[in-house]
Length: 419
Image 1 (tube, helix red, strand yellow):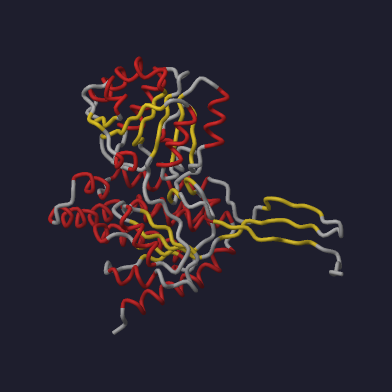
Image 2: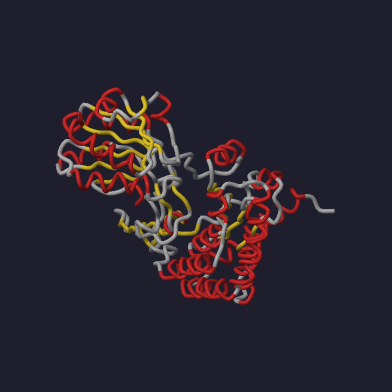
């Protein structure tokens, strides 16, 4: 009997071989493939919903939270959304083969850099079955092979979606191993996958902090990751209060359980007395629990005192840490000390302070007068995203197609030899 380790090794080796074929595919072929996949998913709606019900039933029996069950659920509209994302990815420019720069050397050599696929990408993720299609589509469009390992809670949904996509590969005579899904849920499969450094070029985990730390601690392969999103908004003394209130409410309450929701609010001391009572009343009416420093609590008596742990916290719920700071320098110092390199925003009418904030805050997304909820590949024009990286090598921030490629040097000569 073949062991789990042997099965994973074979999947990785086959994917490596398939990646060579993927790198040679034309843009037209890849876009046709993605559109056919979108059509096939919509045609398989009844089957996909049936398989998804198995996962939902199991999840309910295991006591999964309503939020987790909602992330897990597929219906006709969500399947249409998944198909729409694939069509959007097909419509995006293909980064593979793009020459990003050319220059001439004194000896007349022409030197350039060209985008090429990374090779084979492993995606380890939880809950959401749509990731199976989104991640596969992005990797394949960028000319890579992809190995998917979803969570046990969505195994039937993931297998069904992957099966539909693999059917299109087979129909188009593209190696089916270009898209593989680990078909078993034992942790041994993940551990073996993380050892395949000769076959897999990059690992991208998507899920909770515990999953990501497990992957980082056990992988022999480079990992692109973000542990959590401790996002900040700073209300400057020149802020328009109407804009500030709208942005803060959207950043905290639209979807509090996602990594780009705001977790800490910083307010300039000069506007504390006027702005805090207003924003505290608005947020409290929306069910947000406020935890503030001593000055904030002076102007918002219903807030509870914040502790040191609150400045580090990713709540992922309707809780907001609030602090009054003396000036822009203090705000930047707080953010650079406590941030998770995800997303920060300043609300200001002062151009010079906005520019300082952009230059001196070191996170992967830095915004001016905008909600932190825009830190998303789709919202930033990348189409679907493979994830958000707070790892500065090789990508930083929301990752789209271009981030699933690397560059190689190309050199044109006319008989030159080195002296």
